[in-house]
Length: 329
Image (cartoon, rainbow, N blue to C red):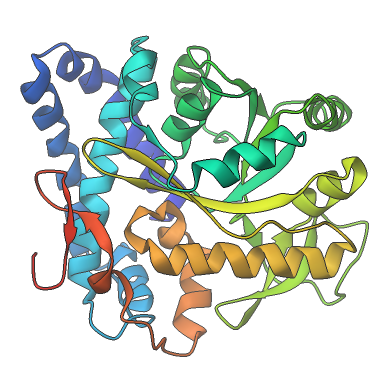
């Protein structure tokens, strides 16, 4: 079972059970979503589902974190994400907005005061909820590529339609309409928030305008990286900012990399990819796409990392408070 099929099956299960869970009193509602983590643990245990391989490969990047401990934190973040997305679907948007925390708020305000910006992120558990929270404080266009599965896509549209920010599904939108919408948003000073970790096999040529990817490296391995961030940022003259989202029980935390001025497509793409990979390494258990087949191959072929990784960072414990996780799980 590949990552896409796993997601489709999980979301179909979520669809009919989440409505009941969200209607329970506060603590019980949150606890009811914990059961969804069992689906991931089953996938982790089954030999024909490569989830364990993905986390073994990811754990190679850190000196002191086992695959199982990384997966344990990943599951916690996953179930918290399900609860919060269901809150959006049920119209509880104010509760999501109240979670927003931007440690570098002054720098964030300075970036958006100058006009639009492209925030390129790895797919994090908190991506959708961060888009909702940020959309409550600044105009934002969420760039998504919804699933091909029509049933799950319909479920996704239910919470996209409830969001404060604008949402464009580039899988189903006309290419010309999508491009014009994104360029218009940037020119009007909006943030575009979109995933930068859709990757393909690295193309032979470094930059072929006929392809939608550029040859770049991630974790020291060649990949085909999306060209859209550099393309749109250079057209409008706005910065690219690699970002990621960290979840806790009480906060959605926006972590920002350095601003990147868009110049040529190739070097700009490599620069934001480097920034995004640094954020993935800093917050690996918030990274949804570590289960993706293309990323698993990248991680399996990557040289072992030297970082002490999340053991030395702030992470989410079982009560949701921020704490040092070294030896805590």
